[in-house]
Image (cartoon, rainbow, N blue to C red; front, side):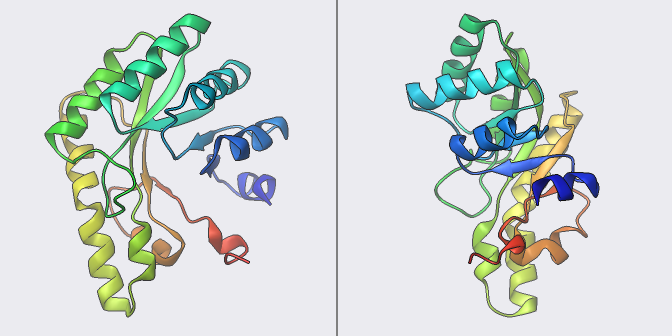
Amino acid sequence: IARRQVALGSIGVTCATVAECELMAQSGLKGILLTRQPTSKNNIARVIDLARREPTFGTVVDDPLAAEWLQDAAAERGVKLRTVVDVYAGLTRHGIESGEPALQLARQVDASKNLKLIGLMGYSGTASHTHGWTERKQKSTQDIAGLAESVEAARKAGLPVEIATGGSTGTYNIDSGTKTLTELQAGSFVFMDT
C-alpha cells in the first residue's frame, strides 16, 4: 500500500516507530520520516544506521538536547541526517513551543554539521477526534497556527523549509486547504485503525 501511495505521488511515508521505518526502508521505500523524536541510545543508533543506508530517511526533533545527541551520533558515523523540527500542535506528547523556541531549534539544526534541516512539523492528532465539522475545523486551524507562525519565521530567517508536515486522517479535508502544509500526515485512513 505504501508503494502504491508513492506511485500515486506521495513524497514518501511517515512512520511513528523506528521499527516501522526499518521495515519500509528494507522494502525499498524512499523519503521515510520518523515522526517521533528518538532519544534512547538504541533508537538513536538505529536512526543513524537508517540514515547511513538510506540518505532520504529523516527524523524529527523537538528538544535542543536531543538535537545534540543526534548530531554527535551522526558525526561519529559520518552521516548527514535529514531533520524536521517538531512544533507543538495540540498533542502534549511532543513538539517544541512555536515561535522563537522553534526558530532557535531550527537554527541549531541548520548550524549542525551532520544534521540537515528540511522543514517543520506540527501534528494535530487531537483535532481528528473533535466532533462536528465546524468545531473540528476550528480546532485544527487553531492547533497548526503555531506551526504556520514558525514556518513563516524560519523562511524569513533564511532557513530551508522544504516541507511543512502535519495534519491527520480526521482533518485531511481541512488541512489540505491551508497555505502552510506541504505534506499531510493522514495515515490511519488506509485501514481506519482496524
